[in-house]
Image 1: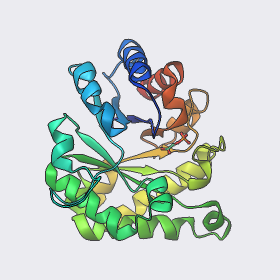
Image 2 (image 1 turned 90 degrees about the horizontal axis):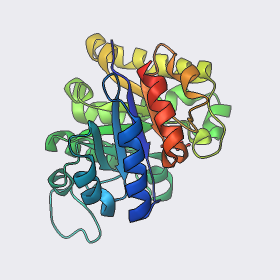
Image 3 (image 1 turned 90 degrees about the vertical axis):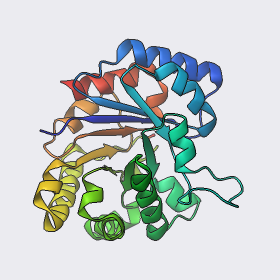
Image 4 (image 1 turned 45 degrees about the horizontal axis):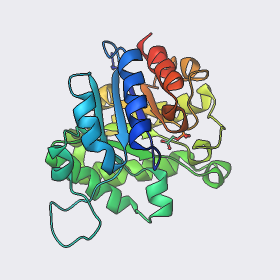
Length: 250
Ligand code: PGA
């Protein structure tokens, strides 16, 4: 039985006051007994999360990191630094990093490996664009993205990470993949990973992302191979995010 994992990806949103309100709402509304919960916040809010989420059962992390431990990388943040602020998780390969900031499969693999080496759990995001789906190459694209990381971190690495399947056409668009569409891809990815190691494939959490909200979460989360959600827009609304966590706990 895989434990559900629900994560908030706040992206580049929030003020100190809004973060305080969201955290208070999450702490009050979310029961982490049957569901792992994490919040991915902009770097500058991580100290605030460290002081307000400690002992809440809710984990926190960053949306990006550099792969090197230190050095002349102006503007970058290392995994060791994130750890110092209590981050247990980090996003890697989010489609916005891939498309807007030019992160290649190799860069994503290096960052995922660096996170594992530092003892931070990567949430590895993969997914196809609308064009790729229409060309019928969804499986090929997702397998290529997984393979780059599998080659870098091996089966053992995949025992310690979370995969987030996020069809790019569903992110921030209000267009959710249907539960069947998402389930098909999740099952295909698990099958692909089983070719490397059946035990790892059965255990790895594969969560769905792309316009998940409280209203569509129950149907998505009841699919056999969907183990949770990576939530963008709806994670900025306390009721929505709490509702998704409730659906996952059921
Ligand atoms: P969305 O974003 O829920 O706003 O579609 C999901 C994500 O980008 O992780």
